[in-house]
Length: 382
Image (cartoon, rainbow, N blue to C red; front, side, top):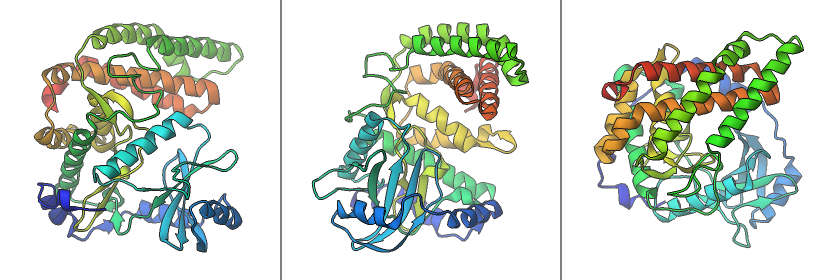
């Protein structure tokens, strides 16, 4: 990756001041790494060799399972062309979503933005099908670390979150006019059309949640979280309809967002640009959707909501890519709307899978939405 584009920009001053320090690893991270090292590959060595043959590469040594996210599965493989990451996508991830991710990564590589690089097969493909699994091969990125794995002083944490805000601004500026192939159903259809999963889609799922929760209660399945959500269903639907009407007519900028921008998707390196990882959830959406999601991931701790951390991120972002007047004014309503949407989706997931953790998340989403509604001056705080 050429780094000439970033050599003289203001990000370089942060690479040196933040990276050139020693940090102590968190004990829970050490335990996580130990458990990850004991995992066995779900793809046997012969299958890996056959997959690499499509890239005209030979396998050297044994594949190693990598720890990581919940959506896909990755192996570190040593090949005749160096170390690579073999990624197997989960069946639940739509083909159109993967196509969009690859289109976006190809564009970012062309613009020299620091992100993972896809490896193409001998026939020029980036997505490989081997029966049911869909696979992709990436160049391995050497020498990176993720700051949340380490114990940090408040000043050090502020440096990392500030840098994260600046990197996000740079990413948004890079993709602001880009229209990728494919699509993610969680986003908008285009710059001027509705969402793929619009208000009618949400209300249909909410109706299903209500009916299924009543049915479970009649069968003797008495869950306090579900009962509480059932009591709030009318409020939930009414609020979604009101907010959708307000935001539908708002001039809120849309662009391709990362979709899961958090500490775990930033790879810091010494004397080099920070890599933004994992674009599986990228989609066309409001820019505010990205920022609000990032606030949750950077601004929350075991002690709860940390508004100061959210302010670090937003202030850094706005230094390079300021919000519009409409975005600033409608920030609370967008935040409330997004949590209400997520509440419905988590509740619906519980009804489909029986996973009680989804109910707890749904309740948290609704409680957060109510908190935002009661604190409409939140945009002044953060």
